[in-house]
Image 1 (cartoon, rainbow, N blue to C red):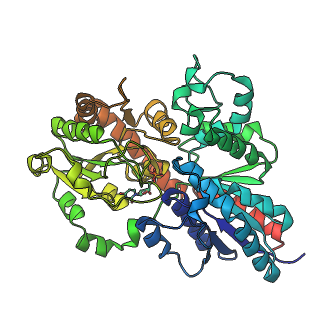
Image 2: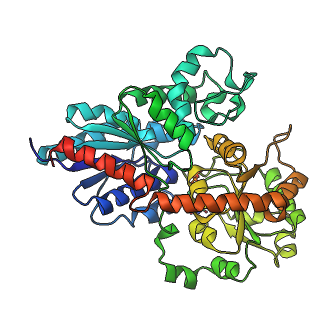
Image 3: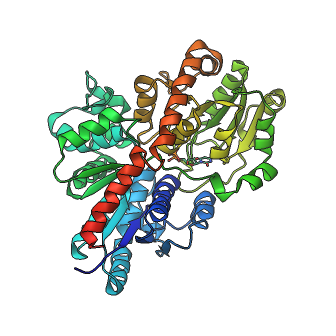
Length: 473
Ligand code: UDP
């Protein structure tokens, strides 16, 4: 048999679908240097600065091929990011195919690993005699839901939000229909049809790599393995997060970033870090309410402010252009200058979470943010906005009990009094202390999972041995 060690990795556009799979690739080539990896990177055109500066840091031992950007006019208007991300990959399929053809004319291919939104590229695996893997950048909980979705779709006739009883997935906390991912809100929407299609396609892959770890979701992972799900093998390989934001070394960070200097001067566990991920946005009214809520709470804070929008994911793929500070309530910055620091649009999140003074994270509950918070042992004020974030908030608050969740009231606004109360509870209440303890123990398990004999490293080695056998290495 020919010795084959070439693997192709296909991310999809959007910071949180690009970075984790590339970080996984780095971990793979570092720990198993006998595999040779090429990343084929689809692009939507105007890459946000965050992704641009990340892409500059891909090490030379990973081959990267940047596909020509797709024509933006071919994309539907006014749809949410998940649809744009997936359509970008669909439109890039001809160039992905051509690239695979060129690559395989020189060396045979062992496996294709694609991000969950790039799953259509896995259809090429058969043609090139290779194995097919999905890289799932979310929780096992969400994966369990997607694997169950085709059945749920057959069983349930109403909208999921109208279900009277919570959905019980094996090994997972019960989940109300209203908290399912955004595309499920309207079952006749294109977004839902695409989600269902994506869910069905999972049954045709050889394996799924999950950015989670056994100790975090042991029951859900065990349930997936026991249930079998056809020929799919599951590999929890997380937590996989960026090693430092924006590629700054520790020295650069200390020298250059004022916010870190400010954080170093604050007492231990006294600062709440407030951020809604790489593109989450609030309405103007909600920005005001959050500002007053922070003020009312009396806590120290560092807030990454983004210009308002009525669409919660407005800045996800485009980045923000307007100066967000002008949208804060009049006098707010002046009144809170002793206790608060405002950052415009983007922050070095990982370095911030590492600071001893950070004692809480008000987060939109993107899975990467959650893993990063766990890795630093920081409890969470959960404020989910879109995608699968409400499910993540449920794991944190109902399952792991390391977060308190803020919910929208009737008028779709989270009110300042409620914000202040929950923040105080997490930052200085008895409940907050208990959450801190539980987070510390998760932090320890996260550290262990990626050590040489840890659960996630073992899972990666298991996968690598399987590939070696398949490739005759
Ligand atoms: N991030 C950052 N600075 C910011 C906002 C986000 O470094 O100001 C990074 C964050 O560390 C995380 C990612 O962007 O790795 C956000 O991913 P997540 O899954 O939490 O949310 P999403 O952006 O997908 O909504």
